[in-house]
Image (cartoon, rainbow, N blue to C red; front, side, top):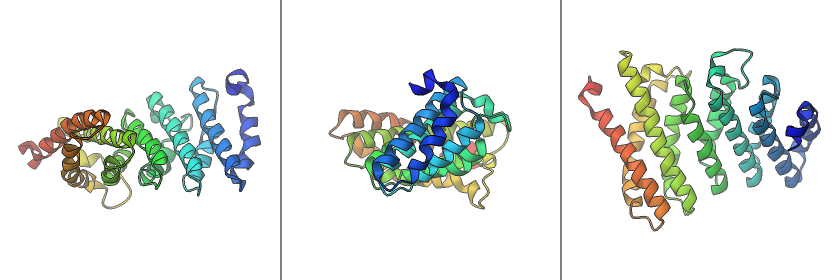
Length: 262
């Protein structure tokens, strides 16, 4: 509300609240990171500069490893707002210095942090991380490096789809289905362009080209969990499992197709 009525004072607000991020009292850190998240959300009107957006992103990344789970939760939620901005402004991915969201920051820092948070010890943080990764899957023109990171995040999903938290189980199954769609879309695009999907992975690490193979291995294990969750006591989870299983089977059949086997 403050940002809406005083858009010119956003930078002053950022400078004022930023020191509270280092305070020992958790309440100060929670309030600060929540405000940072709201500042990012207000950027949909174009009122934040790319420099301010980058500063906020770096501050949010500092919160991912905080000892307090609520601080981590709000930090990951803020990364979700950043991903939403990137998702809503895909044309800016093709820009350089003028981009509101720096692609390099997102791919090299935000996505790895979000994927790592899928393995957080607290379910409330995990749920926020699931949202971030799902939003990343919806980004148009996602760089190959980012796609590989997303596919590799499937290694964290088995504990999530078996979690005690009903909402987390359902969200994890929906995320797995989304990852399958992401893998399939990239594979189809690769075939249509005359190259294998893994050729699009330009990650710096040497094993980036194995992302699709790793994802398939994870799917072969996770498909059993999907089948089990069809009989989940929660109707929300069983419905999510049904949707997910369709995507999982489609992805596995695609990998086994003769055209893919060469």
